[in-house]
Image (cartoon, rainbow, N blue to C red; front, side):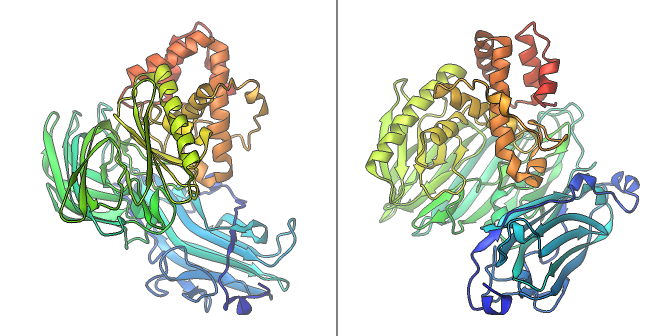
Length: 619
């Protein structure tokens, strides 16, 4: 497209990469924050009308920036902000004033950005978009960042806790070829702080005793309605005055319009949705002391959006991952109300039992977490009842799948569900891979506990693969499927805080994948090259969301190579025993970096302190 006026007649298809020029960690507050941070924090999403669906208020912008025209595509809804794209010297602005609640120790600015350009240079930034908070530049993007597809940008702005500041975007275009910068679904999520309080003894609470769900679908299997109840107890000496539900898939909507809706709640008083509509505070009728139990009940509606995603629809096939509300965790650090990340996982949940009844058209197969039994429903419908013990969450899919089944040598029942376009040969190959992988991992890390294993195969998945207990989404790929099945142990059986410590499941699973496929990782650590002094294998998703191009390289690649190096350092036998014993000790529990480091040190007489420093594993 040569200029924006001509582009109004067509739909843009080229989109963004990212060049962050000012690291978020370098942002300094322009006003005092220490006093504010001593106050209570109420987590909130503070950008108003971030999806531009409610007109222009409270944004101030150049003429024509906020639009619903056909020249570009919204990320969600029907409207978006389009800066520049004229092919002549031009400046566009967009901004609003935001107030970050006092006391919150965490604040993340996120937005979806789409860049298309007619510039041909791959070395010169002719046209630029600058993101600022107050007078500080957070990031700069340019025509050099043009690529395919919207990308989500996340920037840490925690330094502005307790302040009222301006959030602004300025696009400056030179007199040559056009570059358009398109923004949509902006959010600024705050979290952390001193309220709600942490547990005094570090005990993780609330402990879910069971999730009971009954849902019925429409004809397509993409809309589900029904009821959910959650029983829980408080094992901590610190009373529970509230709990939080995580409605993770609301991150796929345009808050406050959400794909997951909770209504008619009993057992507590619901507050407002926060953290981009993914957290719902429920105040309990009375404080729950140590050893006491409570329960919640609510009506639930789920509308699966279009897109071959872990929560999305690919034609006639619906994938329903992370849709059921789950209890957030409170521990020594307080409530964990981290934002959703699309780059990896944010999920931190305690193991529980699930009983899920899914009423659906008989023409649709419904693979799901746990062991499923089908019974006839009303005319033309089937009721699938899935039960699962000691799982961290529950996922399912619905569609006219082709099903291929078998049993591994060690006795695990495996089902491969394929969408249209997957050949019977590829389905059979994935069944063979699954049989081999589940037995290989079980031999190293302990028995597979989830009854059957369902693998849903679709080559349109942009993310490669995704793990849930007893249920995985994947491409036709031996390596990817072996990896996702490895997650049944490293995240499923041995849990972790996936937002704070993504290496504990991804690096361990990639290491397990290498072992299952006969790869030794020889010399793989020799190829490491760090992007900055702050880059660590053990960094949280907040860092990787700000540096997404490094996530896979460091967490998966360097992470598994560090474990190969650890094996070479302490010996093959000691490493084998270490991981088997560690998995047994943490079965259905939570692993931390500190606990693994301590277990590794106990397995050898070699001083591992220099090892952790060299391999940049903190904690």
